[in-house]
Image (cartoon, one colour):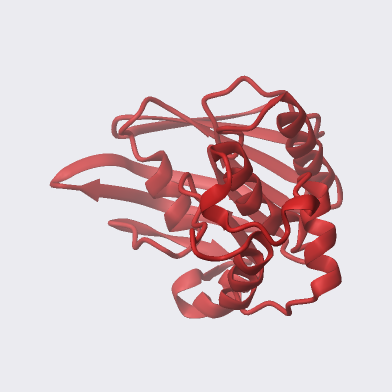
Length: 214
């Protein structure tokens, strides 16, 4: 279970949102929406423990993530709006480094299978600087397919730069992850249908946040 209590975010002496209470249970999908500049990315980073909230707390299984930061990071995969791809490394080297930094075992066969899942197997040894924006995005997203044991995915604009095939594949991966009893929190401006049983929606607008379950 991931939940927030009275969460607030202030940036540059401006309160982006306040009083945000969320609860994301196993087997559920949470979509975060709102205009640009309202704190969506900041919220996602708070959920990962990468940004300290101004008020309130984020909890994992009822315990403040500040008290279990390392364990919490091992339980999630965060894909930000920036790909985090190093130009001087090959595709598979980027994936190896990302997994190692997250403290996860690096198995070459699993990494190659992950690259196959994002249609990058033939680019395994290609230097990242030679990739298109869509291919670089798929390098980042390969971390999802290489990390089957992380119960929480936090995704910031994951469909950006993907073609229709990529959007479909990622939508199916998200639905499968949730269907297996895991959790996904994501932000997107694209109208992408993801077929899961339990969906939630939170709209962040200024200092007000309103939630609804679908």
